[in-house]
Length: 184
Image (cartoon, one colour):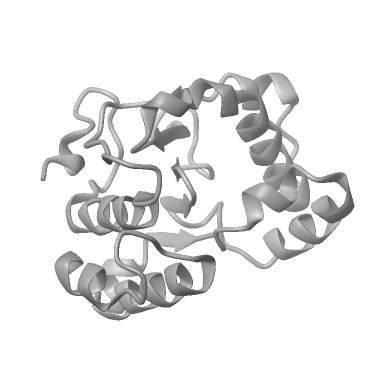
C-alpha cells in the first residue's frame, strides 16, 4: 500500500501539501468505518498556522469542528503528532502525546513548547477547563522511529507511521508497550 503511494507521487521522494492531503484521504478510504471510529486527523497546515498570530484564530475555529475529545487518537503532521486519549480520564486512559519525527537531526524537542500551546488552544476551543499546568503535564514522548535519508521524504514517512498506527493501535494506549506500531 505505501509503495503504491510512493510510486504514484508526481515527484518521487517528495509530497507537497495537496498531494499529502490526497494520499491521507486515500489512506482513510482503505480502512472501514469501524476501524477509523477511534481516529481523526488535522490538516497538515494547522500546526504551522497555529504558531502565527495572524492565523491562530482561524485554527481555533476549525478545531471546534473536530472530535478530538471523543476520538482516542488524533494525527497532526509534518512531524507526526499523535494525540492519544485527550478526552480520557487521568486514571483510566490518561492523555499522552507522541511525536514521531523521521528527521531527528532537526531536534524534535524544539517543538515541545509550540505543541503544548497548540494543545492548550485545542482544549480552549472546545471549552474545556483544564489548566495550562494540567496540559503541560501531559507526557510528550519522542520514540525512536525509522529515519529518512534526506530532507524531502517526511510526507511518506508520516503516511507510513499513520498506516502502521491505525493497523495496530491498541484499545487503550500504554506507555509500557509503545512504539510497537513503528516496526517496519
